[in-house]
Image 1 (cartoon, rainbow, N blue to C red):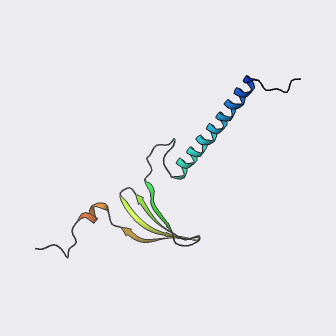
Image 2: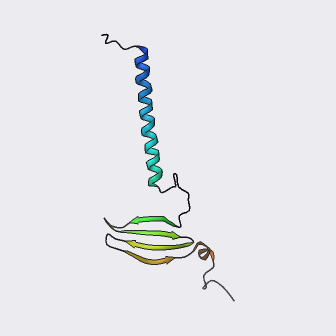
Image 3: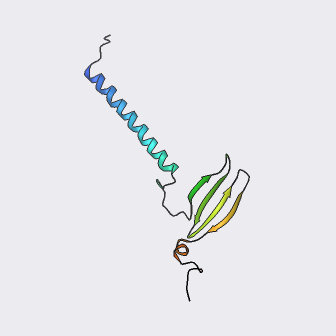
Length: 103
């Protein structure tokens, strides 16, 4: 038995190494896409979306959620969820306030 490595052995080792690293990178990319909530293989027909999340404690969050064209601010704890305030629609925020309008 010969213990010397040939060029073929080195090339097989190198291609195997590159293949495993490529698989790891592809897995990390897939997990990152899934973590961000972007659709990987499914259609983007979801009516409910989480727009923003703010952690205010170890098990408390404030979330801005969109359902169709409505946005709602929700407080989330380990025990329950509470609607804090309906968020104004984007078209409402561009409208002038009643105090600044002149008749």
